[in-house]
Image (cartoon, rainbow, N blue to C red; front, top):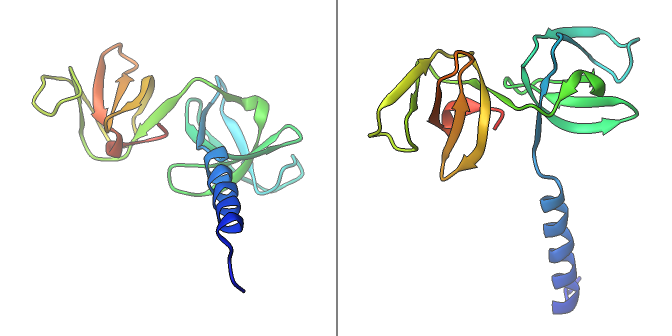
Length: 149
């Protein structure tokens, strides 16, 4: 099959538009722990109880259910109403330092161990993300050191 320039351009734009429409969406488990299932139904097998605040990537939402991915990459279904738009991230490295500014040379505000939940204070920018510790300290960490941003 020979591709004509106009046809190729249309297909390229269609594929490009499709990928842009699928931006990653993160949410967090709400105020109460949420049961994750292997199917979009309470009749499905319970696979995990997600603690409150746990960040998840929303892969698909249908009929009151969301298919989500966790930090380990596992997929499961959860009732969409148990998720909140409040964004948390989980530390993925040992002893991450939260800096006063988005610069390795800036003062360390606090540290957090692997697995600690931090609140997203501002969207990522320039490879850094502004985070808030539950004790109130606010600082910057590298995007590569957390998951859920």
